[in-house]
Length: 64
Image (cartoon, rainbow, N blue to C red; front, side, top):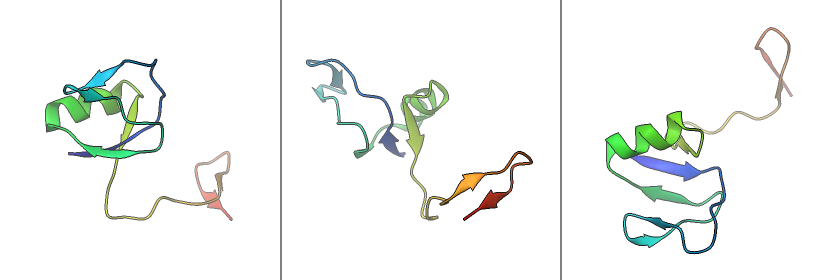
């Protein structure tokens, strides 16, 4: 599963034995681990769809 890190970790933190990726970096992890990181708010899933731009309005619609 491809994820994008959304939270910085302290120096020395590891992800699968490698230094923790910087905030905004993308990496591949096993699906179960990726789901855990996404649901914990530490990462977001990377999809082929472009990320939405603009802000959400009160009813959830996007405006530019």
